[in-house]
Length: 155
Image (cartoon, helix red, strand yellow):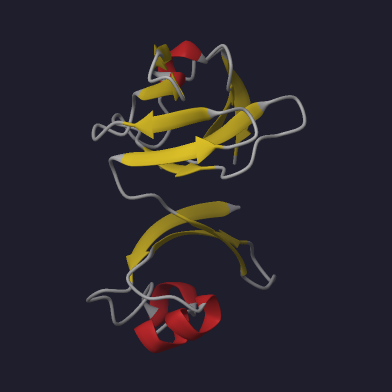
């Protein structure tokens, strides 16, 4: 199976992947109607196999730099402009940790030599980890309190 990663920006993007290569074409209007928003970035993972239908899986991507507060634990997470470094700060503005989750989880380069964070889960998992996804389609789970990063999978 072939996995293709497309980053669509509704601002100025009038077509998705070419119809000839994928059989898909989304206009901005169709994209906005499906998602109910404008000017958002989306990651579209497309799995294509011979003789099978095309499946689409999307997640809203983040704009860098990115900040999110996990209210349930009182920790603010900041993804830096480089798309690689993440810092956690408590409500008293004390830095808890600063990591490069790609390197700390010992990920190997896959699809790109400059992986960047494109998604951060807005809710923590049951074990207190946040999910981070890179544009290389690799995932890392980061313990919100300690910053310990573990491999979360890849396509």
